[in-house]
Amino acid sequence: MTTEPTMIAPEMEFAELAENFELFDDWEDRYRYIIDLGRKLPPFPDNLKTEANKVRGCMSQVWMVPGHMAGDANRFAFAADSDAHIVKGLIAVLGVLFSGKTPAEIAAIDIDGSFKQIGLDQHLSPTRRNGLVSMVGKIKGYATAAA
Image (cartoon, rainbow, N blue to C red; front, side, top):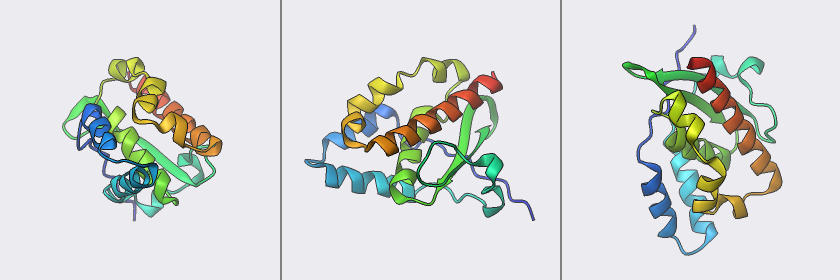
């Protein structure tokens, strides 16, 4: 039986996410917050955890499929999952940045500036950073194809 994924809908704007990060004094608390965001992701159907949907370049397993916001074919969205809690949280952060945006808005997002604003540029291991870059590349590729 094939199950359709529920697309990730942003629960907040990026500015609110950045403000929330500022509430925490240390990175252990910020990591816990990121993990909590990941726990709120919609379930990802097991039948979509295939090689075709796997994001290459991630140390953890990550699966992702493109879609649109419910009722709006002009607004990009995606569904994703990972076997690592912190990566699921990073997927949620990417949902805030990219879901619900048009392909043109996605192309204009300064991902490095956004990560720097919330400190992810300094607090991710090189392997996590590479995985995040791979996920962003996949999202931007999906959005470009949808345009």
